[in-house]
Length: 197
Image 1 (tube, helix red, strand yellow):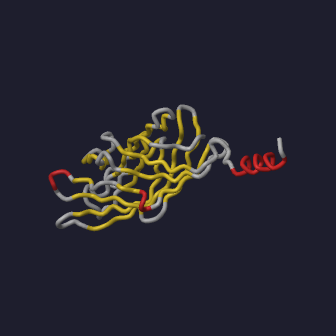
Image 2: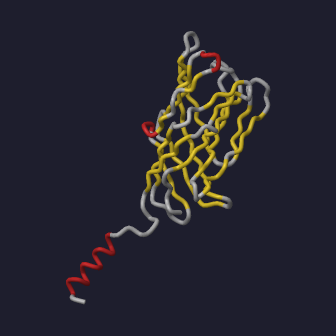
């Protein structure tokens, strides 16, 4: 091999990223199994087709960190029952979390500060909640009954990239609808891309 070709080959090898070591942007598209429940007293469907974009860092040792920017969340307005307005959810600041290999699939967890804006003729306004989203179990204590309400998620299935991410929080006593109830959500859907863990 000529020395110039050898040097060029080394340069190309140094510039090429390691297999599986690249950052990835993956979009989670929600399906018809996504919903929001106010302690089962009121259940609302989260519109299918809503999306959340995950910005995964380069993976290492079977895990990768990620961030979700406020502009990465596109959740369609959620109609309240009885045509009594709608809820609009958004992030107030970037969220961060981790995806990692685990028995039975990929574990996902992140903490997010979420604003719930209520478009309602008399009860309108905004509330902010900080909660943990996970593919394990989420739970919150009801301020009404004192009971702890929980919901189980589902880890990412590596092949089809299907997942159910859950979160739970107590609704404030001055919030509408269902003041003081334990609120939980299931974000069910499929990623278009994931990092190579």
